[in-house]
Length: 138
Image 1 (cartoon, rainbow, N blue to C red):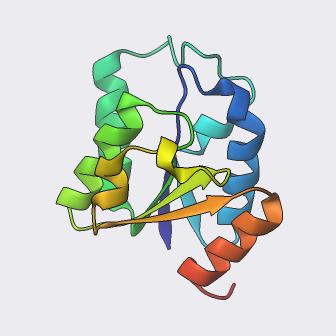
Image 2: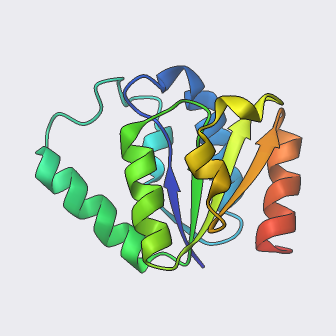
């Protein structure tokens, strides 16, 4: 299975440990595209060695090759919203993970889209249970 992972970079680096846990769990299910988002070496300004156009082309290409999209949506990010919208328009399955119970902080646009499955989590164990439920047994 090809899995596209997306999460906030600019403004979301405080959640990098959660991103790393999610990517590690996802690797049990298949090939994870865009796992660089979880890299602790990536700064809050993102990648500066390639152009914005190259970033967009790389991400959209990986998204198009994916079977499922996993989006960590706790920290609002324009790029994540863009990629979710692009994924749903391509008919991709989208699973959005939100840390904490107060999911009302998450935009109603994401929550209201029938093409996006939203799950709240608190722990790594919760993430593993959600992935097992949504992606199946390993």
